[in-house]
Length: 66
Image (cartoon, rainbow, N blue to C red; front, side, top):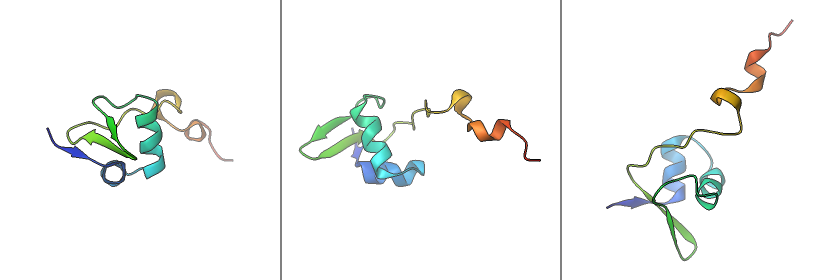
Protein backbone atom coordinates (compact mmCIF):
# COMPACT_ATOMS: atom_id res chain seq x y z
CA UNK A 1 0.00 0.00 0.00
CA UNK A 2 1.25 3.50 -0.82
CA UNK A 3 1.14 6.39 1.63
CA UNK A 4 1.30 10.18 1.45
CA UNK A 5 2.28 12.82 4.02
CA UNK A 6 -0.02 15.33 5.69
CA UNK A 7 1.41 18.01 3.41
CA UNK A 8 0.57 16.01 0.28
CA UNK A 9 -2.92 15.21 1.59
CA UNK A 10 -3.49 18.91 2.33
CA UNK A 11 -2.71 19.85 -1.27
CA UNK A 12 -4.87 16.99 -2.58
CA UNK A 13 -7.87 17.90 -0.40
CA UNK A 14 -7.50 21.69 -0.52
CA UNK A 15 -7.12 22.21 3.24
CA UNK A 16 -4.24 23.20 5.50
CA UNK A 17 -1.52 20.82 6.58
CA UNK A 18 -2.38 21.56 10.22
CA UNK A 19 -6.03 20.56 9.64
CA UNK A 20 -4.87 17.23 8.15
CA UNK A 21 -2.62 16.66 11.17
CA UNK A 22 -5.55 17.30 13.51
CA UNK A 23 -7.77 14.89 11.56
CA UNK A 24 -5.05 12.25 11.89
CA UNK A 25 -4.61 12.87 15.62
CA UNK A 26 -8.38 12.67 16.18
CA UNK A 27 -8.53 9.29 14.40
CA UNK A 28 -10.84 10.62 11.67
CA UNK A 29 -8.76 9.13 8.83
CA UNK A 30 -8.76 5.34 8.44
CA UNK A 31 -5.44 3.51 8.12
CA UNK A 32 -3.30 6.43 9.24
CA UNK A 33 -0.22 5.96 11.43
CA UNK A 34 2.72 8.02 12.56
CA UNK A 35 6.34 7.44 11.56
CA UNK A 36 8.34 9.52 14.00
CA UNK A 37 7.09 13.08 13.41
CA UNK A 38 5.35 12.34 10.07
CA UNK A 39 1.81 11.06 9.51
CA UNK A 40 1.48 8.30 6.90
CA UNK A 41 -1.91 8.48 5.16
CA UNK A 42 -3.08 5.80 2.68
CA UNK A 43 -3.03 7.37 -0.80
CA UNK A 44 -6.55 6.20 -1.68
CA UNK A 45 -8.18 7.67 1.46
CA UNK A 46 -10.98 10.17 0.90
CA UNK A 47 -11.18 13.50 2.71
CA UNK A 48 -13.30 13.11 5.87
CA UNK A 49 -16.52 15.11 6.12
CA UNK A 50 -16.01 18.34 8.04
CA UNK A 51 -17.93 17.84 11.29
CA UNK A 52 -17.47 21.50 12.29
CA UNK A 53 -20.42 22.45 10.10
CA UNK A 54 -23.94 21.03 10.21
CA UNK A 55 -24.81 19.28 6.92
CA UNK A 56 -21.28 20.18 5.74
CA UNK A 57 -22.42 23.77 4.99
CA UNK A 58 -21.22 26.96 6.59
CA UNK A 59 -23.75 28.52 8.91
CA UNK A 60 -23.46 31.85 7.10
CA UNK A 61 -24.83 30.30 3.90
CA UNK A 62 -28.21 29.88 5.62
CA UNK A 63 -28.73 33.62 6.07
CA UNK A 64 -29.45 36.23 3.44
CA UNK A 65 -27.71 39.60 3.46
CA UNK A 66 -30.05 42.58 3.44
